[in-house]
Image (cartoon, helix red, strand yellow):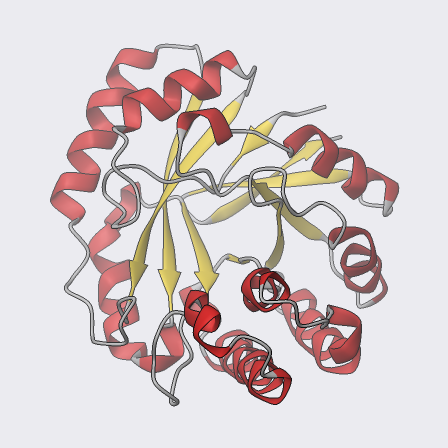
Length: 271
C-alpha cells in the first residue's frame, strides 16, 4: 500500500496557522511516503468578497526550506487548492501560471455559493432546517462543478470533495445525500474520466468515510481511472487520518492504483 496524503494545509492557508515543517513532521510520523501541501487559494473569501492574490513567494519559500531539510525521509510536493475557478477563470489561470514549474498538483474545489451571496457554504449554519435552501446550495455547487470540469479543465487535476456542502447541511439536521443527485454526479464523473482527470477521496480527517464507497462505484462505472486521497488536514494530528481506510475503499471499488502528481502529471502507485 502506497501511503500518501495529497490534500493538506499550512499557515499559508487563511484557516490554518501551522508551519509546514510541523505538518511534514506529522506526515513522517504517520508513515507516509508522499505528502503534498495544498494551501487554499479561493477566489472568493469566506464572506463572499474577491480574495487577494495567492502569496506564492511565501508558499514557495516555505516549501523549499522544508524540502531542503527532508532528504529521503518523505517525498514532498507543492500543490494548490484552487477554489471557485468558475467565478473568475482569468484570475484562476493567472494564479496557476504564477505557480510555475514547481507547482505539482491542483485541487479544484468549490467552497462558495457563487451567484447567491458568494459566502462560504460553511455558512449553511445560517439556514438551519431550511431544506429547500439547502437543496439550492447543493444544486448550485453541482452547476459550478459542471462548469469547472467542462470549461476549465486546465484549472484542476483532481476534483476535491464533491460532497462539501453536505458536511454542513447534515450538521444542520437536513437529510440530503449524494444519491439524491446521482444522475448529475454521474455526468460530472463521466466528464472527469473522459478528460483524464482525477477524483479526490477526501476523508475530512477521518470524519467522512461512509460517503465514498458508492461514489467510487459510480466513478468506476463512468470510466474513471485516476483517484487521489486527502485527509484535508489543518492540524498536525489530522495528517493522514483516515487515509489507510480510504486506500482500502479504493482498492475494494476495483481501482488498482492511487494517483499522486508531479509537475501536474499523474503518477500511479499500485495499491
